[in-house]
Length: 437
Ligand code: IFM
Image 1 (cartoon, protein in one colour):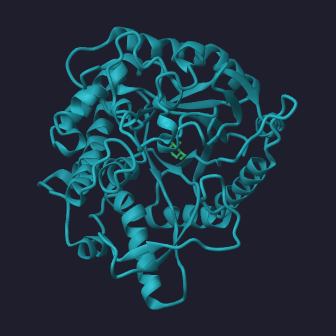
Image 2 (image 1 turned 180 degrees about the vertical axis):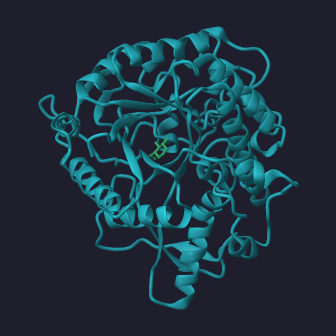
Image 3 (image 1 turned 90 degrees about the vertical axis):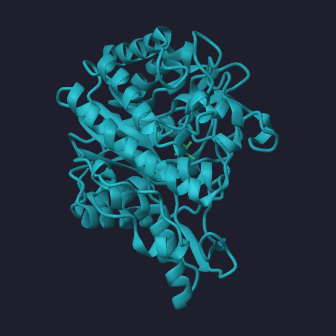
């Protein structure tokens, strides 16, 4: 594991704050947070971890931890407040400072272009449901690559398109809070086409670029041995995993899912080719596995989630199952043959408590250790895994859960903004300093 890349990850809306400073435009999350009942405690990202002002202190902590790479995202409305057209130089300046400060500390920047904070101005024009967004995203990619491409070589187009499409447009649990199947399907397609175009822009503007997309994979297992439940698990796998992996790796959308939904995205000639770009790596985000059963009364798919009993669960109520991580890494390697895999997110939320200025988060350490073992095992069996980014560097705004759920290796006291490394941060540091076995 000598050349293995060890890092930490965050995203713009979850940590930056400074939502109304230096010309930043509004994002769909600023709007969504104001909708009653959508976000716990009416929390929002206005201040978050105040990383916009405290980034140097944060990068010093990263350096102390010994990480070699930092995965962050750019807030589209901070750099192009209306989504296209006029550029906000002050927004670009912030990321210049961030990137330069990383390089000064010999931490390699890994930049995600889109981690869910769409400019609200674009949402007013239909957002991801408007095919024109492919061009808007292309323009945004031009701006980022021409400004940062001299110093940033590792690029990720989208983070977890599933969440933008299904959680944002089918279930309505995330911004922009739409609940419509056809919209969600078109959104998934427009997201993936935007990814395709952005890859082309990166390749043409950045020398020696390392280009990928980040997909969250959630294995689905049947609740019982019945054929019906096994079919249900297969469908959920199709909807959650294959739907995004298949087209990115040159296939069509999964036919079994389209049949079961009785609906398909609006696909034009040439679209699938645009999506299927040659990638240098696949970013894999993994958190848990899901158990599902057949349910003929459920829509849009005849499936339901089942709460498996007597299993360990995180504060998100997600089942802890490292073996599922190993299995899906091996499956992705075998079925899609990515040139390289980076684990771009993996981590867990627990009910952390500060006692005598310490946070003893043994459950997080256990989760981390067992998932790293699973990853190493997949790697030793041939999965081309080249790096691991812990989610998350800091406690942060956990979307609909607000600040209630803490995923960080570093504890953030949101009243004082004091950062305190948890026991897991010391564990990760030790692991990186000793050079993991
Ligand atoms: O906090 C999120 C992140 O923004 C995307 N991946 C999952 C994390 C935990 O829910």
